[in-house]
Image (cartoon, rainbow, N blue to C red; front, side, top):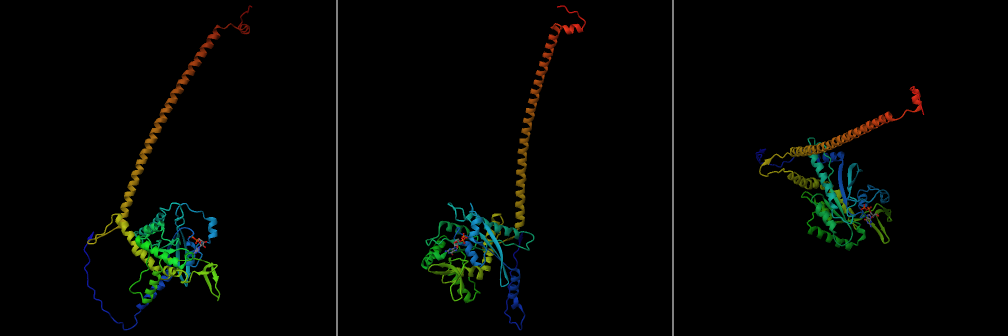
Length: 415
Ligand code: GDP
């Protein structure tokens, strides 16, 4: 349906000063109250070879035992044969604010001799979550949309100190248009400060070279100077060199810190001088969680949706407004699919009937053969019996009578 473009009206905006308190200054508070009541939801994926400290970091980030201790896992968990996608959801609360956190783990990634297609199940999972959301959007009733899309993907880089591995590059290249990639250098405490700095440079150079778009916490015009400076600080630390630990140590002076203990001292997780854990947490949880969700919805999902609908043949001419009806399109596809299925079913039924017919003919044939053989045998037996009867009769008629029989019949018997 072509509809004429709406007339463009010129809007005159006049700035007015209020003469008293009206109350819309309270709007942010209304939004705040509503959001707190509704609660928040966030889905984060962790990817990296096993043993790089993914579970430990997630537990450290959210300060909760989201993942059971390793010892218990080792007893029950068998190493997977393929890359799996597993999620854990938990409701956490801080100062009355509820957060439904889902962590999606990808055990098996990078753990095989051949890791060529390790990225594929992960991409499939991310896209299937987009598909599920798209399907909900196209429903008649869209009142409650469950958002299971991945809002951020923390990618763990092995602390080799050299450069990115081919697997790292392949993974990021394949996924950067589908998910907010947040690369981190795992177990950064195993590298010196200089090694970390050089490693970061090489990683960024590789990322640039391969034109990989990682998540760059954006800054907005309306942000105040302090926020802008904070953001710059965060961005300058990417890829974050992180250390995870759920152990606490007493460092004297009544101070207890989370960290990792070495003979030469303690690496403090929450100390910005020691690692970038604080900056990662700041970006992921404190300043950019909503931004990550918005970017997922407005950019990553939107691009996927456009690609998907275009692939289905739905196009939008920029000059002419055409009504796009994805529901109708999907209905048409469903009908075509059902017709295809019905055709296949009819073909299969015909093949089945032909086979049954063939079998029945064969059975009938062998039945007739059996019957003929039975008849033949019966006749042969009948003939045999008649012969025997005849022989018996002949024998009986030619045989001399026994003396007993002759006496019985009244004959005199002479020797
Ligand atoms: P996952 O398989 O990636 O989930 O790794 P885990 O979180 O289970 O950690 C594997 C091992 O590495 C455990 O023994 C952890 O204590 C240890 N580990 C975790 N994070 C760090 C870290 O930041 N630095 C060091 N040195 N070890 C870590």
